[in-house]
Length: 438
Image (tube, rainbow, N blue to C red; front, side, top):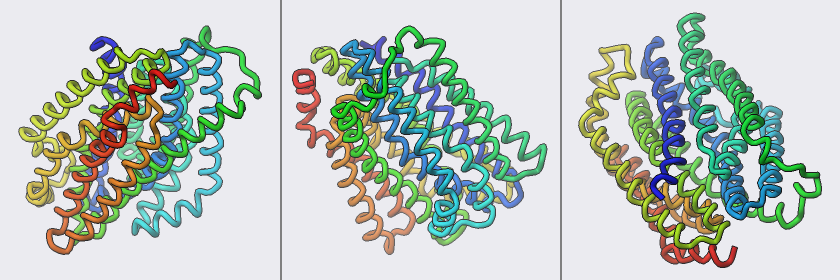
């Protein structure tokens, strides 16, 4: 079982880590452009806007993964092929819609986030990467459901290495500022989507079945597909609200330094979350597979082992942050005069980043289990409860403890997600019942 978990988790950890590393490199590049704090703040707002768009479309990956894994476990390859077609078609429609609506989306986002002209330039450059990014959600969800984590890993590494190289070239070679980082994303995302399709055709041509439009649009299958995705859309929208509000609230703090510090510390948490998500993806893929195969014994063993590995990952990250947090944050700044001020402010809040991995390890894992078992109503309801708690804590305590209220609310939000899912699923009884009722 450990071998099965690591076969999916390790490639996902490697590919996931490239995402926050790309964010760290992008932030470091921005920190070497002119006014470090202002440029990092502008990039943070721009990235937050695109996180809002991407995360609201990430339901395609999660909905596709769970249903595909269950069909894979049942060895129903006609259904897995139909799931691929549904995911790709929906991704294409959403990507086109974002391009058509880019102006109202952009202007509303800039107004809500108090974005500067620098943020506006970044947004209208990077928007052309969105269709490819959404398409990759559908493809990667299908690969995960098919128990293949290597293709998403190869694609992710390719995209993020290309993004960093092009960012350096565009920013310092052509003096394009953070707009160069945006255009690097456009080229990297479309290149990665092309690579992903090529690998799909190379490695799954024998698995893909001939399906017609009636199979793809089969009423019961479509109803289940959109029911699962509907719950995940609500769940994802809550996540987007929480993260976007975190950046927006940081931007309205007393200084640009607090925004920059919160951005950097959130990058450290994001690094942990992408590492831990490797085991969440393994739980997602294997839970779906064992539910589809009606293998309760393997499902129970899988969940127990994933819990151990998720907590172990959290312990490693906490140790790294305790020992090396100053060295990590120092990479962000080329302006040494600002670095001392940044580290002084960061020292006030670093304890939250050290504590959050322990609070978030099991909630991330529970997300994967619920997606694999397609218990998406539990996923949705737990997220709604946690989001309400997040805002209640922030607004009740912010007048008294300032920025600490934002970090306390974020930490409580993470912990409550896992607790709520555990009890809403009948202490996982509903997950195990799926091996009988599926």
